[in-house]
Length: 512
Image 1 (cartoon, rainbow, N blue to C red):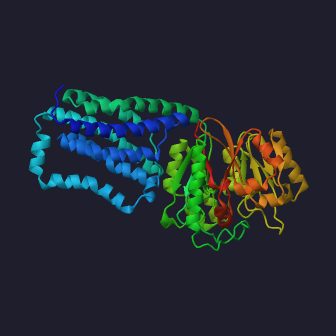
Image 2: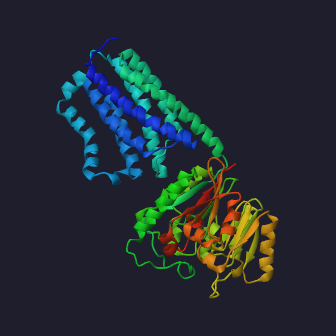
Image 3: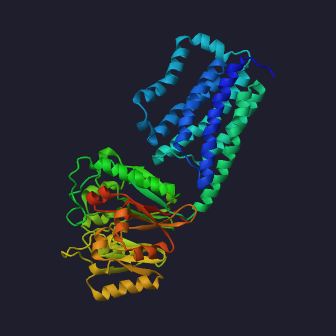
């Protein structure tokens, strides 16, 4: 083979490719373990380090295609590191130095552009036609990073989608050909990662097949979480907090809950609330929409005026894309008539039995409920439920929860014996065991839980540790017969917001 650079230059290049190889080796291992394509922070950290090394290699090799290729992905790596919150763990000057590195390379080029042109674009070892082919290969390969950025930016999360890996394989093939012609064994051998890219395609396709019919959980990361005066009039679970940094506590609890779900391979779609929206309750998205297997997205009328902004067009587009929405049923016009129905807060839906359970309250109008049932093909079971002071229970999902084989019910708050009999009869006919919850347990959010499935089809019941601590061993045993209990720590959110784990998760059901 012909070597037109010193051995140490090639060693530097192999070091850069080795770092790139290590990143995808780790990413592949984690993906194989979870059976889902992962986007771990270490992948992006190693990517940025490898890019710096290959910048230097491309400069020493006087190969513009390498410099061009690394320039495309560099800041995208930094964006992913930022989204994952990793920059919080390093000194600020490190971030600044990292951001300035490509600009320093650019400054060197601009300072003596004629020399750069003569050295890089008229390199005797790289004919212009070959150089253009190399740039094409790098362009296709790095286009995967641009695609990954656009895909992830819309979802406000670091994701490695299927299209990313398809472009990686295509670009790798072109780079291997270029490297062989160029006699650049660093480029040719360095593309061994094509094997892992192909494997990620296989994992991604397999995951998509498993995911068919498994709902995503939409969670909204709040920007202005706080005590909502407009909802406190009928939500008697809310309490003001003496702490001045409620938002900070809420974010810590929110992020920790997302991590718990993701660690158990439960698909989560995180949306970021915008600071200018000033939505104190945006962390509870299950109140303003619901999705259905027939491709319908339903939008609901909200009781509190300051919660109506939560129907954010950007989040709605995100939901529609994830669910494959084909039809929108907009019930929000009922707000003009002073009538409300706050989705799966006001209703607890038995989707298989096509029954909507609802307790009457200022937030749950029978007129709107009838409209929903008529349009969506549900039957309703309506009842009165009040607290010890005689106030209506503001949302049905704080006194009733349905799993596949169990129902958590606070009988103490249902004031009409005939309505309670009808309620229990329907729950039992649906094949569910009724777990009777006391009033005190309900006040600890023991019914505000949600049964979910992960990508492997395993069932989990997500509840707060407050709720889990309130339930007895025998009650927990019944829940655990067919599902794993998954507790989350959200005391500030519960106290200030007056809602618990179920309220924080809105199901995005893929259309059939």
